[in-house]
Amino acid sequence: MSEQEINHVNLDLTEYNQGTTVVPDSYYNPNIAPLPKNAKTWTWINYATIWAGMIHNVPAFMLAGLLTFEFGPLIALMIIAIAYFTLLIALYLNGHIGTKWGIPFPSSIRPMFGIRGARVPVIMRAISALFWFSVETYAGGLILDALISIFYPSWSTISADLLGMPLHLTISFFLFWFLNVLVLFKGMDDIKKFELIAGPLVIIILGGLMIHAITLANGLSSLFQIRGNNVSLPNIALAISTMAGFWATLVLNIPDFTRFSRSQKDQLIGQTIGLPILTLLFSFIAVGLASAVIYIYNIPSNDTINYVNPVNIMYLFTDNPYITLILGISLVIATISVNVAANIVSPVYDLISLFPKKLNTWSKSAIVSAILGLLYAPWLWYNNASSIENVINLIGAGLGSVAGVMIAHYWILGKTEIKLADLFKPNGRYWYVSGYNVNALVAMIIGFSVPVIGFLIPKLSLLYDYGWYLGLFLSIAIYLGLERKREVKMEP
Image (cartoon, rainbow, N blue to C red; front, side):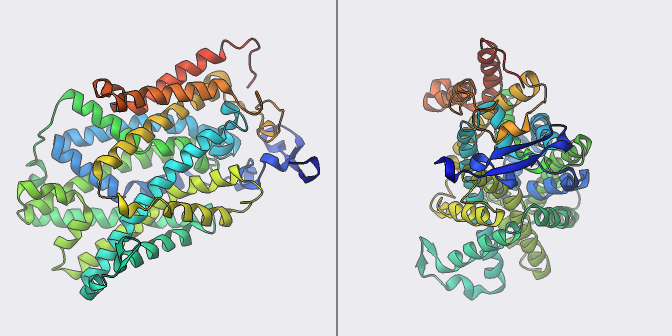
């Protein structure tokens, strides 16, 4: 880029006690700059409802059910609690950056990796988020298609093939995709309002349905009739690690949300209510609903595994159209809720960070992100459960190593201090060598590679099984060791 093409922007950081400065627009965009304090309006209620909107999704419902049939209900809930309480610690540590400095993930990662080097974890996070966006969009399309087919059976007879799917499913898929874009398009304020209604509404509806089902099953006894068939300490530890990997993506981009927080107290209380507490409630609902309907409808033991899917449960209630309609609509709302908040917000910020001039508005980046999600063609591989599980574990390992570098730099080396203007300045404090902090990249690569070795070599599978935790702690140790060897101590 020639010097003539570079414009300069006045950056007022007086609210953060860092004065005013001028930065080139090469790596700057208003969407990834520190928020003014008057824009930081989210309370603990908003964070609780954001999480309420993210936890009630079909994959989480299915995971809760699978854990129940594998370990029994009490151990399943214990696994979920341990996994999510450990995640909460990492979420708070990284969320602190957004709350204190008003910046999203693509900016908050620059002090660790360098202004250019930050592109690597940003791209990793975008790839994984768009993967999940494609998974949830296809799941939502299936739910919408099933709901329409129940009330209009002729819908499923539209069987002409388009894009490798029956035409009726293709239409449902793209209609659901459009509903996601509609919620996403206008920005974070509209997303906040949507989640404020959607999150609690879906939990109330599913909770009411669970109570109804348990009443029909003559109490909770049906739930506790399930006995785990794979209970052992190694298997429990493995399940905890897998559950942690399920939300590893949010550990990184939680600053995208906490940058709007009024205070650290708000984000901590809201996330504590939202993640471990509401997640346990939702998991209890999922376990109770699945168990009760299996008891009510005398589903044979060899078929119970199919009823960890709430769509199949919806079909069981077709004799009561009102319940079917309410459950179907709540599942559609739930899937939009998690898909927008958990999966597509991050790529919007990521693409703005990567292309600050071309994708210079939220709406442009939102459309591009949603279109990129389609390129994953989830209809071609969605039903391959083992492939999806492997992707979850690999994503967890990779993003765990990024989270480790973030935590080590921000909390231990930087003492939670950031020079905001240098986030956007070539040759500033976070430029390192040609824009890259090699130490951070090395720590991340090693932290990620060790679990991958376990994936490739079956005898070392233990490394892969605990990928998120291993990646996290390895990268912390390696990054701190490399940074402390610098001849000149890096200032925060």
